[in-house]
Amino acid sequence: MINSEKLRFLQQTFPALLKKLKGDETPEWGKMNAQQMIEHMTDSFRIADEKNRQTIHTPPEQLEAFKRFLMSDKEFRPMTKNALMAEDPPAMINDTFEEAVTELEEEISFFVSYFEKQPGRITTNGIFGNLNYEEWINLLHKHAVHHLKQFRLI
Image (cartoon, rainbow, N blue to C red; front, side):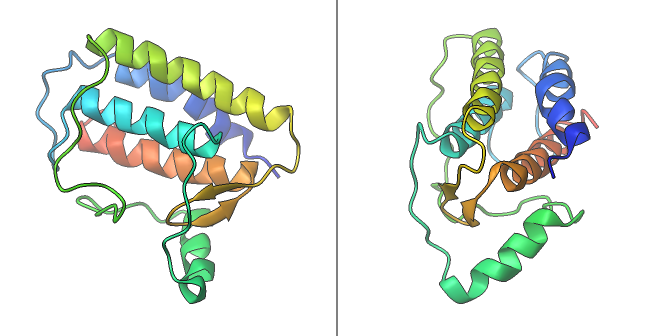
């Protein structure tokens, strides 16, 4: 069952909180600046809606435990390492911070439309495996909260 509160958070609260940033803030942890974080979140939605396809890198015997974490209320810890990311953040794509936020908002809308038009659709996350819409909402919510805390927005 889709958690409408988490979905509403992703669609409304998350972008509204990001718009409070100026773009030059120093994060509590990590190497990404605010714009790089936003572009990283945009990439996460693109993985969910298959614009950026991934293959599973997690050993099969660990996927069940990873999915239990994904569906739990446990948060990502500060400095959680994403095994699929390079040590240093990629160069920024958008010319401005505002463009990055707008692109993220557009990608969130596309993500919702993508899954609502294809009930039962399963797509692949390189760490958590094959996920349905509900699981993606949980993961993306958990991921958004992690980065909002990184920039002291919650």
